[in-house]
Image 1 (cartoon, one colour):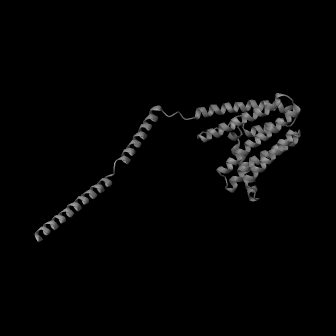
Image 2: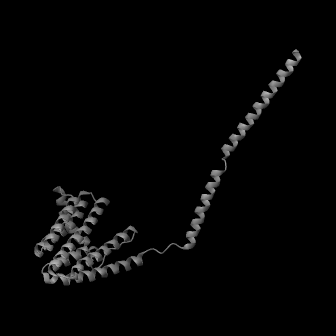
Image 3: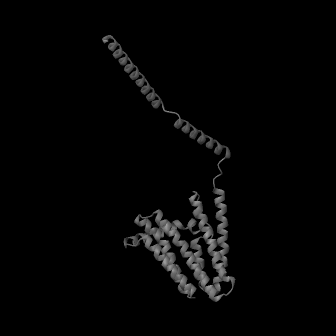
Length: 258
């Protein structure tokens, strides 16, 4: 939802900040890496029960993730490698943050409730995979009610109090699953129709016929080779006839001499 509706507005607001950071020598890869470090620190703070400190570190992680794109654009270093690095670090950061939440629940809520953050992580991984797979097929799968920005904001609200955390996690799980279903339905509608079977067979026959022609051409001698062989054979015949004629002349001359 954030990517689809407010991304352009946010990019216009963060553009000047990205240009300023680029002038100070800050690179997008540095922001991405330090954002991962702040996510690790937030996970430790949440796991040890320092929830308010976890909120501050969570906001810091979000700022790093928000500004690495504008810095890359300002420096003209936007690349496939940078996008790949950013995407992988986002997934690792999600795992760290929810792992910290699971750590906290394991110490404060004994029982199976510790599995709730892992269920949220599985649902978020599904949403991310759907987008990556759809984009690899040439289909846009952005959008949904619970993308990464919304998850970070909602998790920050949950960290305001230990009593809020579990209900917020259940809400995150439900909304993330709704997003996953919505993306699946969107990609299903936008996916191209399958290639007709008849055309597939026709293309296969054309390719098979072309291969057969190439095999026949490889097996049969070329015109140049046939012409060359004919020339060689005719030369050999003329040479043999000339040699035979010279031998006959010498034999007749020898008989006359005798």
